[in-house]
Image (cartoon, rainbow, N blue to C red; front, side):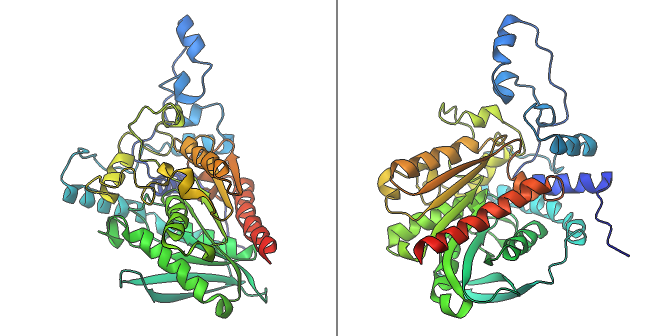
Length: 402
């Protein structure tokens, strides 16, 4: 009998929980109905988008949201991953222990996602273990389409998780890499060292160094792997690492080895608690999938325990100046309309343009943080469009440089 891929209410609950975990949230705002506007001031304020207009607005009730995502949240009734918060100034060991518990709670849902995984019999999958810049062992997960011969673009992929959580072996990222490979690319998932959780405790710059190591390995193996051009990509924390790897390559003198960068919903400012007028989306979409008041600050502290890298572009690329960006390869910065992190991604895109870097900015309407990567069965057309955008960029860069 054909496999039943329909989604039950229970499955929606699980998908929502897992997606929320991957998107770095804990207590999100999506279940409570928006308040009624009562005063003239409220009427004026209500014209502003999101929670700028109504601080009590929820993701499920924001009129901009894709109705399929709203229906999923309303049906599932999810309120978070279920862990009690700890003080943001708790000892770093306690913060790391909390991250471990968070990761374990999210990982319990992975079995269902693997059971729903489409078959990828047309994709060859294997692993390689390399030695990193710091002398550590790094596992790489390679995915290549079986039916395509000759040289094809290669995408080195850094998974999300705030540089602190999750794994390249999680089902969301396995599927993402297989789907990209099916579009005609060799995809390499990097099992980089996290700042906490099962792959921790390795704060900045461990994960960055591992991504740089993977990209340099792929560059050295271009002929053996059948690679035409080499790109790096990632979403959320992985978007940070993708952008930072390009900055590191420029700083260290090997920028020519990277042919392009595609960053999705990058987490790059560490300004979660700041009232920065240039980053209004932090307030406009506060609590929409990304808990900017709690989990974001907690993870950033684990990533850089001393805070000494708070303005280091290699840790937080938002702080890169045009002089740090000039000469970089082509970039695409893709953001989600309802993401608290939207404006920092757009700000980085504008910096790239100012520095003369070929760049494209992309806004995925109606979606919260990472939904076009994490909800393939809820918004399949949006998911396919993002897969197509990454693959088309990789293939276009290859054509430009031949």
